[in-house]
Image (cartoon, rainbow, N blue to C red; front, side, top):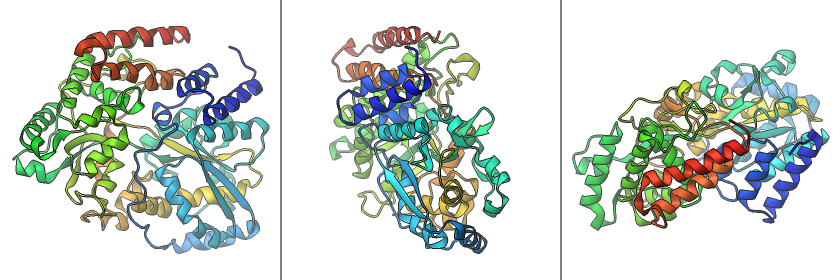
Length: 507
């Protein structure tokens, strides 16, 4: 299908609205987005019609102690815009949820009103597309999934350049170099331009119950072999007590299962695609990874095959599992004051596999095999904003060192800025047990800086990662098909995925 730009935008808007009204399925929605050439990260599409693994604010943000020079700057710079209202639309990401509770502080300093509209992800896309199509300026700031960066690059203002062009509106000490370089490169840069500012980064780490490891004399696992031995030992010893070695997010047909599978494949030296752009999950390393995952399911609560990240989170919070390699966002909730296992969970580096990781030259479509599966987003200044300078003040404030640190303190998610990790307010909570702990963040930073992995980047990826791959995997892990044969399942997925790639003329 060939589109003029205006027609394509109408198609995107109509399709997103149809999905919101449940007139089409998620499969149809993703298929149509692929036809329109709109990228969507698989992580983002995994939360369509659902929710993030994030479990709400785990502690109150630190009290308002805006740096004196920043407060003075905002009061002076905001005078010209007092009474202005700016609008920002986003899905319910952890930083957005926390930021919504803090925005009154910005209004108090500047007189600028802020409306944060939190809607389902498909509506974020529809609203942003409609806004750029008509150059309406309805929204002053856009939330952008990392796969939308190139699509909206022409409709946003490069924040680095704008900071230089508007010295009278340049927040003191904003410091672009303080943003994590891997996050800038992976989430918000396109064609040598910053499309927005990094805002959100869910990522896999290893988490473990220190009490159970100590009880059974088990060292913290560093490798998949260590992890396997620990999981099997604890299941054998604790199953009668309702405790399993691990737990999975293995719901058939859901992206959460694809996340588990992808990490298992990478962790065993495999990849999703080869350099020839053919599906490679059915090679020796891919099969080894899937067989390992089948073994983990045998040592998991039975409801693992019906669980997404929500179910996996509940397993950890209720004390049902001992070890888990999954979203670092779980950690604050598992240590919250209302958790049954408060203070018993710890975090460690992601597991290392039995084989070397595949290099980027050995895989296709920009895939980055590594130990830490990730997904991410940015927020960007609209080129069509009618209140662009007021919005620019808010964007700087929202992504400033102080506010990003305070958002982290309230939600426990990974900071976008390097300075947050060494901020005294973060450091003082590193030994805290219960709500507001930050003792996991050094591990999160190490994972981002050293072993961050990314799924392939191709227009149809969101579709196959949410449909063909987890559907066939679901048939395997639930016993509906394949008779437990990992190779047979992977061969079928290879046929389906390769056909999709060929049909999309990507090979």
